[in-house]
Image (cartoon, rainbow, N blue to C red; front, side):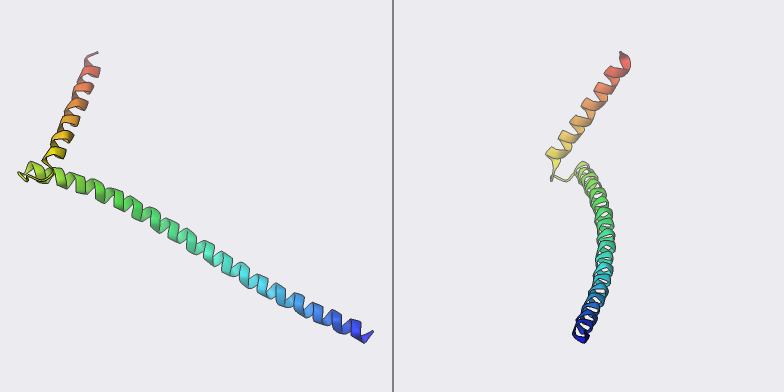
Length: 96
């Protein structure tokens, strides 16, 4: 009978250790989820910032070309032509 009691005690101890380990893993898992959420938020913020900087860069590039720089003149001319076409289209829509 005492052998069975020892086996049961050992089993209870092992189950307790498993529960403790499981709780630790659950906490670790939650910490990792929180960190992942924070990281995703940071990535999203940085992506928006990158897009804003790209737009600003394009504007500065066009402004630099308009100031007399020979670099990117072709791109600026294409952009201006595109804007003129859009304006003409808007005028045509308004006159209908």
